Length: 408
View 1 (tube, rainbow, N blue to C red):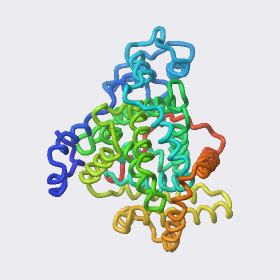
View 2 (tube, rainbow, N blue to C red):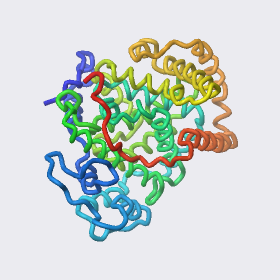
View 3 (cartoon, rainbow, N blue to C red):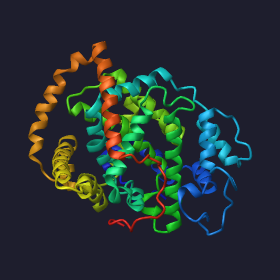
View 4 (spheres, one colour):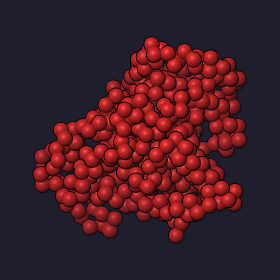
């Protein structure tokens, strides 16, 4: 059974052939290892600790520090074993600590630096480009709708995404024991916790949407944070050199490995990643009511959260700029389907693009690259701090689910 959300057009079938038949089953595959560990480490992820059938499961460890803290400590300190841990927990530790032969640390470092140098433009494309595109999938957006995280806390969700991307792109962050490696593990387990809650609810329609947070959609996330960001920067006049683009895809390939994406799906090049993105885009169907609700929450989240007249004025300006960016990056047709309001700010963006493009030659000079990297780090530090508002990003699964999706 292939979920109903998979809708290959005749044009897509002609272009991609039987590759679509090989991609579709990944909608029904999730991350069984992380799911099993999340069931054992039940307390950090919400839920009652009972499995889908209602049978109580033993938790680990029975006393003392939480299992997730012990697992994090083992990764951070480079421990080969976690004494007393159940086999699934040990297997997850082994997977996280094992660095695949194909990982090129120099390429990972260069890819992270290439993203950081884009600075504010990278942040703009991440929010108005990659995140918005993730909401367009009428099947892939359902776990986010069920969790309620964006609709209820849109600014917070955006800040946590920025914090995650900022962390994994830092020098050395993805090496064994680094913060990026640890954070990738936490996000993997958070996804497992969300899946657990969704499955327990009995409301998720697998025949329509596939498994919640499935392999197909995890691959899509890698494409969003690499190819979509790279191409979005290009639309704003910031053309990333080909080698930098390859390196950024390589970085996200390794992050995908850490987050449980199956090896067959991990793209080995920019061209392969782009092709995957085209296949996903060609088979996902049209945006639905949940797509529009998520985009509305992203655009209006800061307006809703404003507490003073000054905050509201700034938030409304931010909304107009965000709407203009969305239309500029995605085109009028898709923006209309997503309910993105029209904004006169869009008229300024071609000028911005021309100005950014004019700096391309200077960006290749070593001192300018060093300055751009330092400036990019300052931007991300400030942006993440402003979004988190002093409350650490814990990447915990919600304790409850939201209402049934509007398009359910």
